[in-house]
Length: 92
Image 1 (cartoon, rainbow, N blue to C red):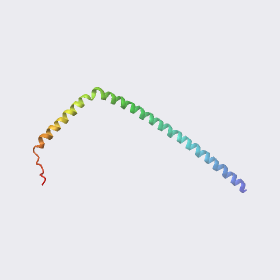
Image 2 (tube, one colour):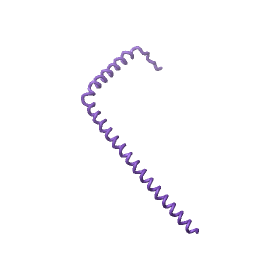
Image 3 (cartoon, rainbow, N blue to C red):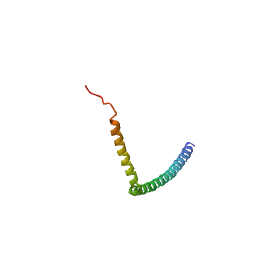
Image 4 (cartoon, rainbow, N blue to C red):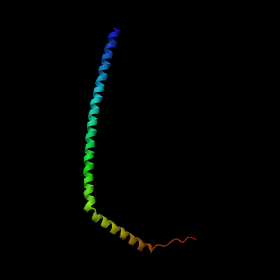
């Protein structure tokens, strides 16, 4: 009688172990497939971003560099002019 219960429990636990291993394998497969799709999407997005950046780096950025240098020169002139109105601290 005790041997029969032991064998039934052994069969039940082995079946549960196989079932758990199968569920974990299927879950791992779906997670890996999702991660690979996500990485493919990221790769395509980075390729598009690189394409946009290379197009922008050509002719489109020229006006921005001109404006940036003009603004930088204006800031220097304003700083120079406003520098005359400041009082300087005298060191003893």
